[in-house]
Structure formats: C-alpha cells, structure tokens
Length: 445
Image (cartoon, rainbow, N blue to C red; front, top):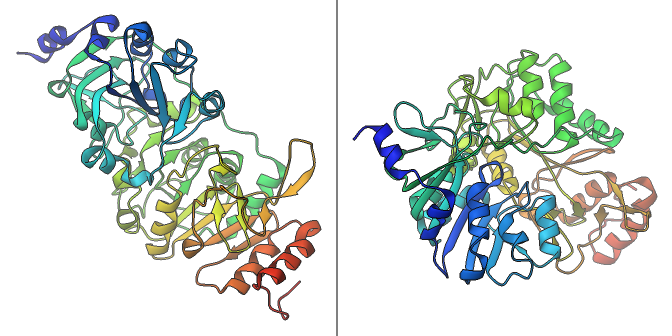
C-alpha cells in the first residue's frame, strides 16, 4: 500500500476519531503548540456520555473546549507538567492540577510507568516518505506515541517541518487515525519587554560568558535581553544548546554570533527540544539546517550536555532563601509554573568543562497591596516548593551582583545571598541569619 493510500484509509472526521475514547481512559494532549484543536472540540461534544476521562497536557496556551464544556470537572480531569498563565486560571477554578517530575525523565515516565490509552496531537503534513514532523514540539512526543494504545494526529499546515537528530517525527505506520484540520495559528510567546532590573542582571552575568560558550537561555525578559546583549558584544563563536528556543537566539543568529563551532553534541548545529516564542522563532527553526530538534531526555541529560565545554545556562527563580535553596515554581502552596529543566541544566553545567549555571531573580517584588517585599528570604513559607536544593546551588544573580555558592558553608552562603538582596532588607536578613546560627561575627555586612 502506498503512503497516500494508507493516509486515505486512516483519514477520519474528528467526531469519528474520538469515538475510540472510552470512559475511564487516559488521554494525552501533549505540549502547548501541539495540543489538538478539532479533536479537543469533538471530545468536548462527548462530555455528557463519558465519565472519568483523565487528560494530561503541558503549558496550555489556548482555552480547551473540554474544560469549557465541563466547568465542574465531572467528566474531565486535567493535569499538566508545566503551568502557563492559562493553566493557573484553570487551577484556581479547580480544573487543573500539577504533575510533578524532572523534565529530562518525562519520556522515561511514559515508556516505563504511565498508562496512555489515546494520544491526540497536532503535527506537520506528511512528507513523501510517510513521516509527520513533530515540528516545534519534540520534547516527549515520540515517547508518548510509543506508549499510547491509539495515536491520532491532527494536521496543521502552520506546523512546519523541522530538521532533527532523532525522535522528531512519527511514521504513518505508527499512526491509527488522521484528522485534517484547518490552518490553526500558532500561539506565540512575544518577547517580554525587559525591565531596567532585567538589564542590570544581564549586565552582571555577561562578563562570565566566554567566547565559544554553548548557551541555554530560558523564557522571559532577562534571558532575551542577554541574547540581545550577546548579539551586540565582541564575543564570537557562540553555540545553542537549549531546552527551549527564544528570540534571543534569533538575535544571535542574525548578528552572526551563533556559529555552533564548539557545539560537539550538535556537531556544529544548534540543539533544541521545544521552539516556543514569537513568530520569528517558528520561522527561524522551520527547515533550518543550522539547528536540530531532539527529545528532552537527550537535550536535558546532564551526561549528554556536559560533552560541550563552557555550557552557560541562564534560568529564573521566584525566590531564594539564606540556605541557598531556590524556589522557581510556587508561591506558597500555589503552583505557578513547574520544575522544568532547571535541575537538569544545573547538574549539566557542573559536569561541563568551564560550565556555569546562573539562577537569576530580581531582589524585590510588589505584593498585592503594592508594597515592596524581598525575594530573598530567611526561609521559605510552609508549602513553598524547593526546585533546586542547596546541595546543587551554583551561581545566583540579581541586579546587585553574581555569587558562586558551589561548595560553600552555611555562613558563606548566607553572606553571599544577603549581598544580592536589596540594601533596605539586608540588616533584617542578617538578624534572621544570626538567629538561625548561620552568620559569623566576622561576616561582611
């Protein structure tokens, strides 16, 4: 049978395809840009006839019909590996819960431990060899499809083919049903306008970046401004080794800085697993031979990433305590994002020759009443999640400087962390450190 004939034999209307889903099933919506449109709407239409449908997703970027059709959560239970702003709103309504895990192990969870009845995901159109590219979302797509009893792909012509290392596509022989969708627009994460604080933090980190560094940049205003500053700097032969692309990498490429000369893992190509950003990010990675998509258990493996020298990672956190614990995903007991790949890149940068990982934060924030409060605290409030433990603490950065916490004693850490705090809060933090027994009398004030 030709690929075209096989395609026609597996083609279904959305309402037909979702008939395979039965009460009690586990259904995968996968990650963000790859989440289904027509299949989601068709499944929502079955709300009254189904019970106990568990749906997994990650970083939801557009409203889901299944949750709109079931506002009391009687039929659908939705959980995510990483929360977006929309997921937080669903969480506040009791419609979304968090699925904890280490990001590099996500494919392993599916292959070894998790049950999947039906996987539904958007893909690029089939190529002449019978493959559907996972396009902008590699992550754990292949592992999810391998684990699923039934795989349904929804074609989106706005998802473009990308070049990959491996597990960046699925063959028609591995697909059970095909749904042809309309050309759904790709949700975008537009570049966040950096604040003056973001710029100052970036300026503090920049001197630590050497020629030939292989870069991991996170999401947000500060990582993007670092990309802009690196593009304008005298540095040369930078590489891209990142969990997620961002506009900062496009700036580097357009400035001729992103040569990947010393990217051993990518063999001269930029390495990424998820392409989420503005439209220019999507256009840049599409059929670009200079970059390659890999699954997250490869990209985020500390063993693999450490093959690159001078791995330089910039990630964010929410707050930092005097024991040098980093909270990057919750405010008290309220989940606001996820662990993501922070631990992966902290460990990998330790293993890399010349590697560094900077966990960055602004020293203060405004509370709900508009008061300025410190993000650097004596200890975390009950229930606050520690994303990176003190045993893995590496570089920390605020607008007041950069400190290396690796291997330091408790009193050295307290002194270093307090040096990053806003001056208005330092004396209070010192008094708390004294009460906690982690402040030497000879420490610098």
